[in-house]
Image 1: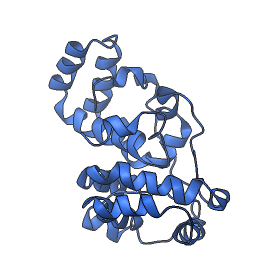
Image 2 (image 1 turned 90 degrees about the vertical axis):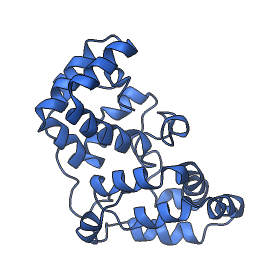
Image 3 (image 1 turned 180 degrees about the vertical axis):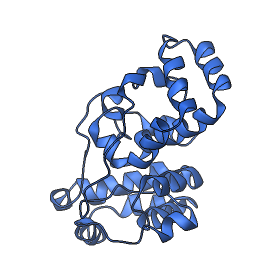
Image 4 (image 1 turned 60 degrees about the vertical axis):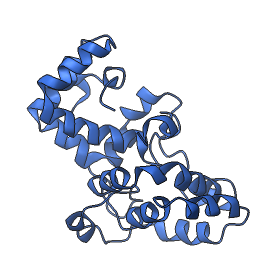
Amino acid sequence: MVVGCNAIFGVDELKMADPPEQGGAAPIAASTASSVAQSTAAAGGADDCDTCARGANGCDAERAACAANPDCIPLDECLDLCRDSICVNGCLEMWEKGIQELYAQYDCERCSGPCKDVCQCDACHATDCADCVRSGCVQTACHELWNACVASSDCVNLVACVDGCNAVPSCEDACVNMHPSGAIILEDLLRCARCSWDTCYEVCDGQTICAT
């Protein structure tokens, strides 16, 4: 997932991001026990969206497809506990094979009927993957992971290295090999940006890159 990141953002764009405003809608999230334990505060508006989505009509096929995938319901339950991007990333990594079916269910329940007025559909409002990933929307939704990269010299140096590769895979691979700890941080950031339902999943072809 790190390969190709030079098409996403340059090292000059890596500046500390502000956290989401308190009381604003939180990003869908991922999981470790400690992160979940610290993420129990409800986000404003989230309950209204969830209540509406649970009662949405016309989504039986999507719900059945999710129920048939052993990763889908655990992913949904994991994300439901999260209120930060570290938690989001953990859920997406742990239950990645359920992403496609769960997001199809989300799209139907939240964005194809009256719930779209209370749910965050197309939250980043981008039509290009690179523009979406470097947007303020992602810096806010994934701010813990974004700032972890900014604070890591190895991650910043990796971005700078890949930025000079002109999308040559062998060059990018060499950069990753030179900056292994930065690669782990950057991969987490890109997973949050490209694979969260409410950031860049659709515009970044998440169906192809997020369950591999």
